[in-house]
Image (tube, rainbow, N blue to C red; front, side, top):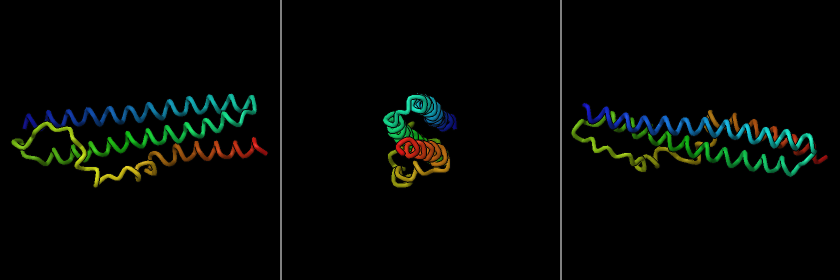
Length: 132
């Protein structure tokens, strides 16, 4: 039982790092995009809003990637917790769960779509207002 608990601790540490990275990405994305947005509003610079729009997509993709990885490791965690203690090999390979967790669904998850969707819609509205 001790081997299983240690392996689960390893997997949980990876899950925690993925969740922390996702949190940091959201913070950096809001900071950078808000800065570009504020500067473009004072200078009436539409290209900066376009850059902010592109960066929103990049941050959205990165955040989705880390969420997808986190979900893969959660599947690995669930798999390992059901194993017998003798079958524990301390493998951290989550590739066996790629078929179960599709990466292209992740950007539209309930945690990412409202966050980045709101930012994208706001930027698009302001780009259209500034180009009139």
